[in-house]
Amino acid sequence: MRMSVAPPPTPSDLLAELEPYVAKALDRHLSQTGDWFPHEFVPYERGRNFVQEPWKPEDSDLPDVAQVAIELNLLTEDNLPFYTLALTDAFGRTEAWGEWTRRWTAEEGRHSILLRDYLTVTRGVDPKRLETGRMDMLQRGWYPEFPHLTPLDGVAYTTFQELATRISHRNTGTVTQDEGALRVLQRIATDENLHYLFYRDMGSAALEIDPSGMMMAIHRQVTGFAMPGVDMPGFKDRAKLMAEAGVYNFRIHHDQILEPVLLKHWRIDRLEGLTDEAAKAREQVMTYMAKLDRVASRLDERSIPVGPERELQTPPG
Image (cartoon, rainbow, N blue to C red):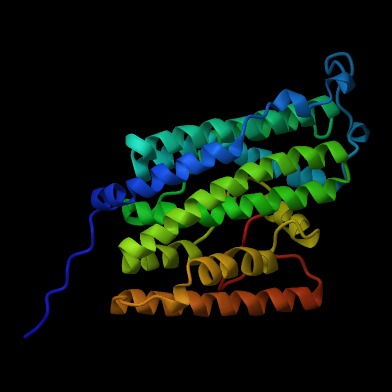
């Protein structure tokens, strides 16, 4: 007699089952994040009037690669309205899910405020270019459309994205060679790490509730991953500069994002009870990671910055 297979949970069922985990993780987040204020990180005494003294390239104390990296980081933070829309579409707006999205939005908004104020006051980047970029970014409205609108795709994507953002901010702080900018970016990276831990824990819970569904979502998000801003003008050239400087590249994406999340924390290689389709998806993810590792090694050996590959989507800058 053939055993019947239970149908996968619906998106609404998944959200309901994850709700207790969300509430617990939100309480933990609020106990750890603490209050901090952007104005305490900005050296306002260095400020000058831009009308009387227009910005000039020599005003900036930041190396060229640091200007590129920090500006790109700010532009991705500026896209906040569309991230909030994506999370609301994926997770809903009620109960703990809604409370988390609103809190997350408030914290991310603080990041863009701090970055812009610091860059403007210290004349780190051309303020007209910053505003032109912000207007362009928001009018493009980059929106991570999760396949099938499943909450699991939202959990998988945000886990990778938050960790990638944390690493990018910290590495950008290092290349700035500026104590103030380093302090700013480390503060923001601390928040991003807490966001990453929240989503990583949701991923662990989802793997317990619906391992096959989550494995399929992981496959979609790993093989199709792209950070916000990938379609902005000049992204390819900026990404190359940042890759060469060690801010973000294939090696970092493999060693510091995919490998620890997928193998150390989610342990996808040890998952049991997967459907045939999910087991095949896992195999494809492992193959993708091996290919990414080979590409990263080849680029390392040639000292070539990351660029688009036919087989692999370029990791973000």
